[in-house]
Length: 147
Picture: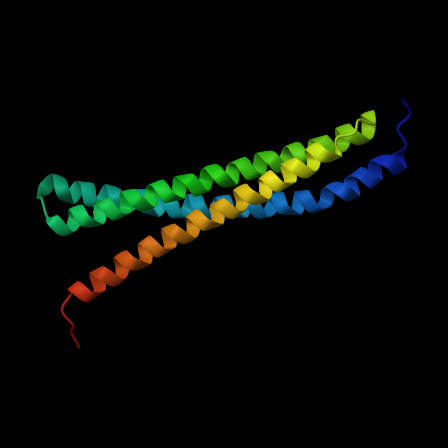
């Protein structure tokens, strides 16, 4: 088994697109974890207020925050699964080239899985944004209008 430098260069060229995709997934994870951190911070503030005195609006907001929390957690899990699938795709590209194993179907299948999980992650992020927007609109309409 004699591996040429040009063969390694070709595999690196093939791996560039998945690596860029992996960078995008990393950015997506950063956005999701930042949203989760804000949800957690707001939940802690509400729980402290509820420890002092029970108020129905606080309970409603806490319920909305818990719903958002779950949506973001699903999005994070799907993004992480996508990143893992992309890493395996990159590894299989190198493994297939260096061992001459026919791994192209596995690579294609894992890439499809990565795209499905990434799409799911975006769907859950969008759902969380809709829940957050709806909650803000609902609170805004309940407040008296002041000039």
